Length: 397
Image (cartoon, rainbow, N blue to C red; front, side):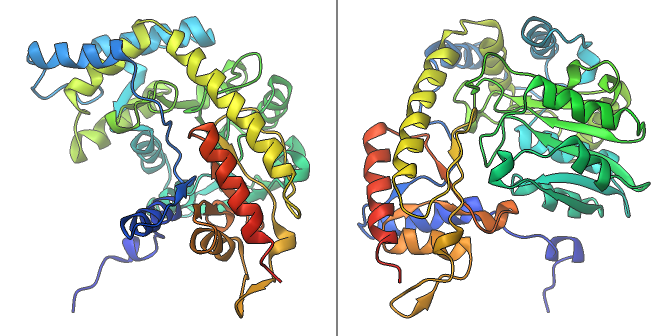
C-alpha cells in the first residue's frame, strides 16, 4: 500500500490555493465568480523589468547561477537595504531563492529542530505553522484579536517565551490582516527579545512597499537584536512579480551560510533570467512602486467603507498589504437551506457557492471568526463583490 511519510502526512494543504482552485472550477462551469482569495497584485510587471529579462535571454543568461544568486543581484539587494532601510549587510549575507516562501522555509529548516518552539502571532500566514511542522518544531501561537488591530503586545510576547523558544516570526505589513507595527511597537518587542539571546527573529517584510504609513519600519533597525534578525523579502508584491519567483534573506552570516548549504542540495540557485529581472527591479526606476501603492490604498479605503456597511462585520482599518480581514463571528451558527455555518471556512464556502465571491476562511490563518478578502483587483469588481457578499449574508437565518 502506498503511504506518504509521517512528515508529509502532518501537513495541511494551503487553504488559499484550495479556495482559488474551487473558484476556477466554478468559472470553468460558466459561473461569474469574483476571486478575492489570492494574494497577488493584479498589475503587470513594469516594462523596464520585462525588458531586462528579454536582454538576459539574448545575452545567454541560461546557465546555472551561483546557489545564493548572482553577485550583481545580491549587490543590488545590499544597496537597497542601505538606501531604503539604513541597514548594512555584506553580499555574503544575502541568499536568493525561488520566492520568499522558499526563503522562509530555508531559514526554518536551517535553524529549527525537534522540540524547538517557534512563537507565531495569530492571525498568521497559512504556511508558517506548516513549515515549523516540517522542521519537527513546536508552534506556539499568541492571539491578537481585531480589538488589538491584530497586533501582539510586548507583554504577550514575554509570557509566551520559554527556555525552548528558538524563533519568533513577525510579519509586518501582515498577511492576512494588513496590520502594520509602528516603530514604537517594534521597539517594545525588540526590548523583550533582547533579554533572550537565543531567539532568532524572522522578519517577513515581503509587503514592505505596500505600506500606507509614512515609511516601512523593520525590527532589524534595533541594535539590541540586529545580530539575530533574518529579513525575508522579495520582488513579488512590490514589483508585481509573483510568477518570477525571486525571494531573498538578509541574515547573520552563519544562517546565510546554512541556507546556502541547504539550498545547494535541493534546488540550487533560482531562475537565471528572473534574477536579472529582479536586479533591474531594484536598480531601475522606482516610480512603479508608488503608482501601485496609491491604487492599493484607494481600493483599501473603498473596501473598508463597503465592509463597514455589511451588518455583522467588525472591520479594522489596515495600514498595509492588500487584505481586509473582517471579524464575522455574528454570522457563525446561522444556517442556509438547512446547512449550518459552523466556522469561517464554512462561511467562505457559502459566499463562494451562493454569492459567487471567493475569499478565504480565517481558520487557516489561526482566526476562526474572520474571513480574508484580497482587494488586489479592479474597483468595480470590489464594489460588485461586496454587494454580493451583503446580499448573500442576508439569506442566512
